[in-house]
Image 1: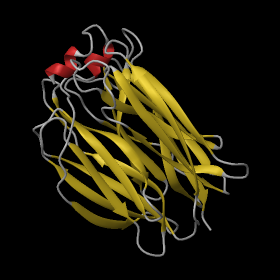
Image 2: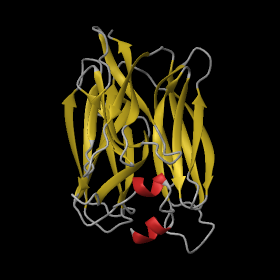
Image 3: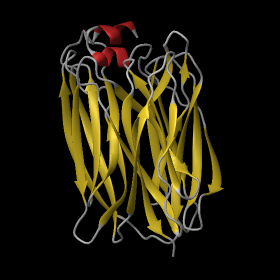
Length: 308
């Protein structure tokens, strides 16, 4: 943790955003569970317990039942924050479709020493067919004093729409200075934009991270329901859970996305998103924290399909 702080100048808000955190590695077991989300979607989950030092990596994969396909997925890590502002957090670096019937999530631990868990969810449907998958990649370079956000958008072909999406961002990548502490990579946004799925990530620490975006395209246009909330900065750190707008009647939530502010200058608040998953039949739920002692906006989106 001390090494990570040294990699970011004390005057930079990114250092304040990462106080009390360092990086994650140890996987225990996955326990599948299932719950009905709507007549059109079925949600299954798998949970991995994590109890290791900083730098521990964890992953969980939720698998859909036979006869269905994974349309979208989500993640929900548990977090432990102390009164001093330090603690353990899992930063998700992967959330993507894995084959036709599974959704994989991975995360790394910042902080360490507390037992936490990572839950992956897969939202499954027997009504939607095989998606057309589009992939886009981008390299994000940064120095220890200049965290650098980057965006990668995967575009669906004509007459297809981004119904859901996924991402992967490398954790450590290549360091340009061996004396640097392990760099940290964060996902700051992942949502549909017209016929594309756009993902924003940031690297904190010298070197490069690789950001990969996945768009899952279907010949049906989802209805987007946006909502903007302000996350309140608190001490000790508190995770705010937000519910994005509800889908209209006779529609169901098929996926969700969000965008958050990255610390770009002194005196600006920033958001660190942590969780995103289906909540009931018509909502998508998000969890995030405001850091740097300043409240900041968070944009959530639920994408809806009409019931058959």
